[in-house]
Length: 184
Image (tube, rainbow, N blue to C red; front, side):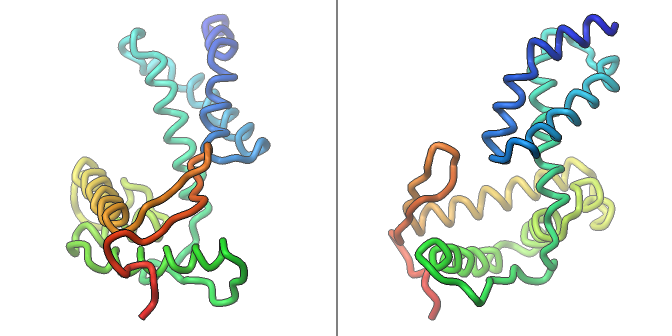
């Protein structure tokens, strides 16, 4: 068993680190998450039913670990996303404009999608905790969050054109179809 785990570690460690590093962009944080991923793999390898799905199973653990990392860092209040008042420079101004637009877009989501998004993304709850709080199944909770994200993304892409760097960070944007990114 231990030899199998060592082989997995040697085979996937670098790929998983690169995968995680593309999302967290901090080498030490990525190393910590890689460590957590392989600890989970070691502890749960017995639960893998189909060895043909090993690689996707490992990447799913890595995706969940990255999500958990970001979820742990969220400390924003549930009711509102606070937009920093003291900003300067183009990047900060762009952030304020996009945040303002997102805030109003979140407000237009149907109530159950808005609530799911706010609880999971800004309230810091896991989807399981959110499901318990709302009295719905975990599957329904996941579905609501995914649909809310998709609705928000569609609305944002309808409104603005974005340019991204190779890490997926927004480097420029401009309004296309509506004034959502400018305060009235």
